[in-house]
Amino acid sequence: MIDIVIFGAPGAGKGTQAKLLAEKYDFLHISTGDLLRQEVELGTPMGQRAQAIMNRGDLVGDDIVVPLLDRALQKRSTAPNPDSLIDPWDRERHGAPHRPEGSIIDGFPRTVSQAQTLEFMFRKLQRRIDLVVAIDVPRDELVRRIHERAAISGRADDTEEVIRHRLDLYDEQTKPVLDYYRVSGLLMTVDGSEQIADTNYRIGLAIEARMK
Ligand code: AMP
Image (cartoon, rainbow, N blue to C red; front, side, top):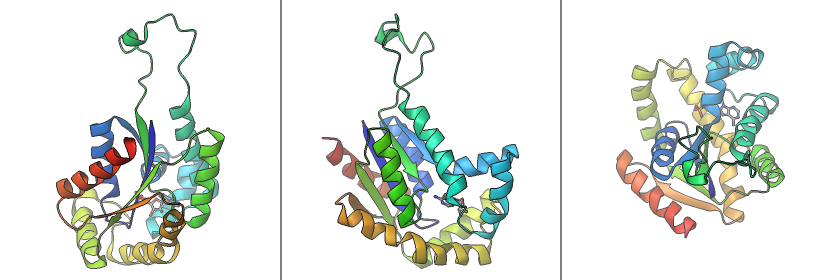
């Protein structure tokens, strides 16, 4: 069991890499951006409050993001029923929940305060973060990629002005999280400026080294 945070600026490829890694290693992928977009789509009270903030490219308040993440982590931590009469090898066939080999958290933490909250949430679950992978991509390349994504995704927060704002916010509020994890010895930085497969290979090596 391994718990990983994938970290990087908007456009660094966190979501893409997290999905590939989740498939390859059978991890649960938890993306706070996806959780929020889901709430927006469902029109829940949380989603209604988050929508305008996300469209502006601002950070949604911890009072919304933290409970969403907490719920996703709790699901992941539900222990299998020890009294189950079903042979463990047969669980899948009987529809028992599939147990992933670990989790990969994408989009959280985005502030030092969120990093502290995450640590607290994991401690409550008697787990800890094993590895933080930071995908490093130069700013020019980030802007180019987000423009490319905007043409396909239709995301309201992928417009020119909002992109610049999101990158500025990353520099001001999110980048300091790197130092937080550097000090705790959990940080592994990976060059993400090349092809998706190259970055994926490098992250895979970091994960496998940590899994040993
Ligand atoms: P993402 O899909 O990770 O790019 O996130 C899209 C948007 O969701 C961000 O620009 C924020 O508005 C919001 N968001 C996602 N994760 C967080 C977080 N950890 N804290 C605050 N806002 C977040």
